[in-house]
Length: 187
Image (tube, rainbow, N blue to C red; front, side):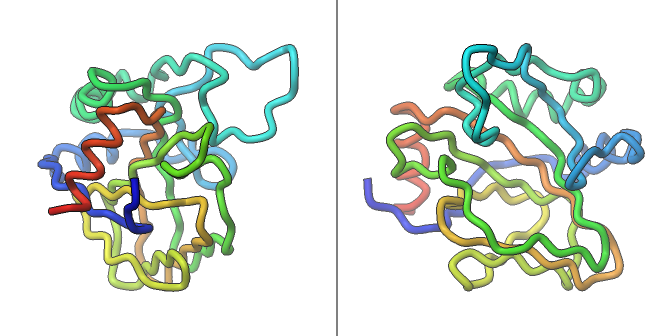
């Protein structure tokens, strides 16, 4: 499968419902790197240490109480669960003035032998947010769904005056996922 490093997925989402639910969640519960987990691993593996938490194939990922409190967000996640295994689901927050330095995620791409893919759905953003993949900006708008090849270098800056919050959904790619993304790439 040959696809580009970014694909906007034609998915119809209710942005206002997502925003309403996100606003009900306790901001003080965001943890390290401004992450609010909506799923969490049932248990950590005991046989060998986890070296890449982006690869969620090593555990089951039940919903946290935060996702249980957000019926619309849960329905979005469950739509994907009806087609494939969903692993890590999070809200990623970047405060005004925040920077995520350039990095790569070695298992977050369709081309990898053992991989997970991540869909990104901006919920709150502002014109000062810049998401860069392979040094080129990705013009993500609120309510859009994107597949990005995170095995490539990427970084984020928030030069705006408000926070940026994205819904991040990781899943194990199967034939349905690959076909779905390929159809979006061909459109």
